[in-house]
Image (cartoon, rainbow, N blue to C red; front, top):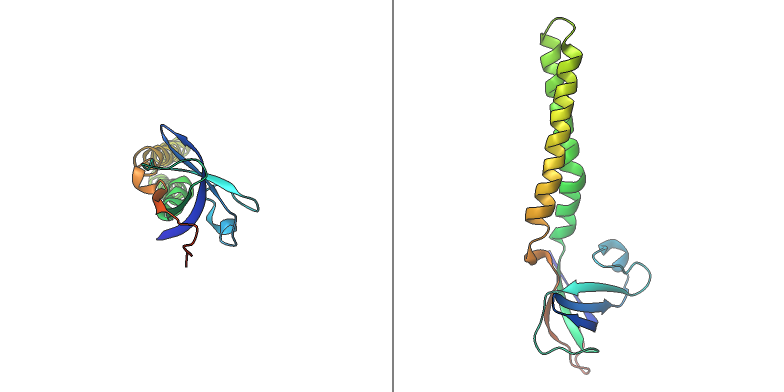
Amino acid sequence: MIKRETGTVSSITPNGVIVKMEASLECTRCSMCSAGKTDGELVCLPYPGLKKGDKVRIEINTFRRFAATFFTFFLPTLLLIVFLVAGENVTAESAGGRGSFIMVGFLLLGLAAGMSSLIFGNKFILKKKQFIPKITGKVDMEEKII
């Protein structure tokens, strides 16, 4: 889902444009910038022809929020539970005193799989430019945003 907002350019860097967002009612649910109850700032992709103080339209891909939650919490927890259940099944079938060592091995494999999902999600999915807020254009002072 793409969310459209307006903001004011506060500075321009070689890496992107920093846009100050005015806090709205939706800001408390979004958490894409630092705006909770006060104004926050977003780092957007570079856009030609802007200067400090320009009002701009911004598109924010809210899928990033879902993907961050999924790769940070749900997938590692799910992998740990899957390896825990697999370890329980393997140790239930095996006899002897080695069951606890097998269980610990499966738990360590689950932790390793969860950590690798964190690294994969952060490095290959969340760092892509398609999830960075984009400036779609300037806003005229007389133009009203609906």
